[in-house]
View 1 (cartoon, one colour):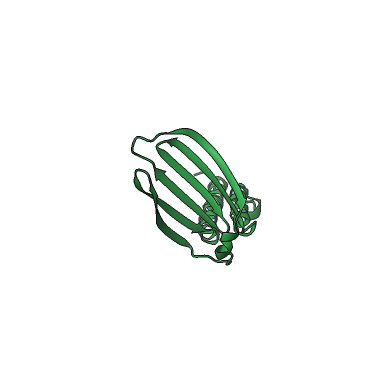
View 2 (cartoon, rainbow, N blue to C red):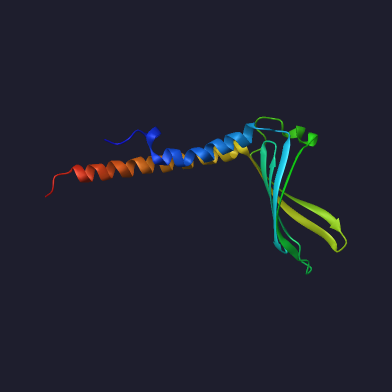
Length: 148
C-alpha cells in the first residue's frame, strides 16, 4: 500500500521551504536584514525588507576590486511602514542611480513579495509531491502485475 501524501518523503522535503516563506512573510515586518557578498568587482546583496525579499547586484568596475567578504546587517527600520500592507506588489524591478566620485553608478534591484514567492512555491511543491506519489503508484502496480 502507498503511504498517504502527508507521510511521504517529498512532503517533508518541501515543508522547510514552505515554513521559511511563511515565516518571512509574517515574522517581523519592521526588521531590515541583509547579507552582502562581495567578490572582486562584483557585489550581491540579499535583503529581507519587511514583507519583501530584494536582490541587488552591483558591478563596481573602473578597476575597483573588493576583498572577498560576507557581511550580515540587521536593524529595525521605521521607514518600512509602507510595506506594512499584507499583500505588497508582487514583483518590482527598479534601477537606482547613485552619484559617486567616478560618475554615476546604477544598481538594479528586484523586489519580490513573500506572498508571491509562496504562490510560486506551492504549485511547484504540489507538482513534485504528485509526481512522487504517481511514481510510487506506478512502481507498485508494475511489481504487483503477474509475470508473463
